[in-house]
Image (tube, rainbow, N blue to C red; front, top):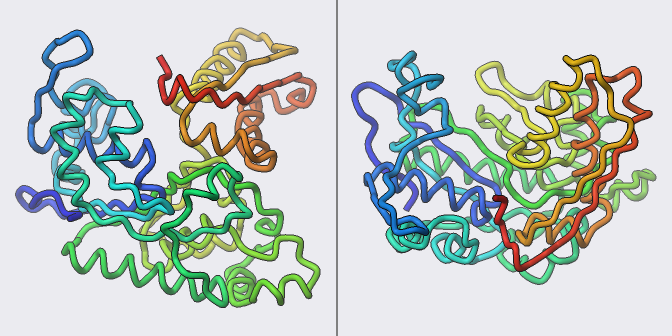
Length: 347
């Protein structure tokens, strides 16, 4: 199961493929689409009756700042989108949603069965790029290939099959929503498409013999290359430096896009807003200290890998770029704490 409905009128069907589809972002997105498509109602934590809506999703909103009523003939209807994706864990999507404890149980129970019927493709995985806490559960993975180029070819075939099977005549977007990877130092040196292609065709042993520190290219880059080769867009929802590869950006076709460095939904978004407010007031802080304490899988990954934490903190430090001339003098400290009891509760 991946296709939800038939598009209305002459609108084209779009495709969404999520890397890390079994995580909190992927499962809540699918649950929200199902709830809207079925026009579900459920009882909230106080017993109040709630209705499905797309509040917060500007492309689907028909009021206020929403785009749906301003561009009625241009934007696809998300309810008819085909959804699929990869995950390195085999947990059924409905069960993963229930375990995450993010949405109200009365809603989860109404979508769990449908979500459990969705296919989960085996994910591309390199344990060196993620925290040790992720290793034990990474059992749903694609078999290693001789070169990264071979893996890209496999991913491209999956994308093509998805588009053909679901009769997608609109655009397809690949969203990287998997665990944060550590940064890859060699990406910035791949300045052209030819250099990127040549690196993809090297074996790990050949890279090592050439004196390259990173003997393997990161999975996120392979997904991004596969997307570009198939004319799909790529959105990087994690904070590693995937898009620091000039060759990747040159590979992207004119009818698609490649963007993103981390989702900004919590502390990062607040800091971004606070920085803009302070800057317009002519103020500049000397010290900013904060803590990240959650019990979700993202925090578990960060807590068990110094290098993935560095990738995450790189994004948080970049918030201060408006003060570029003095940003280095801002004493910015962030403490990462994995607290399982809190789970994904951000309120």
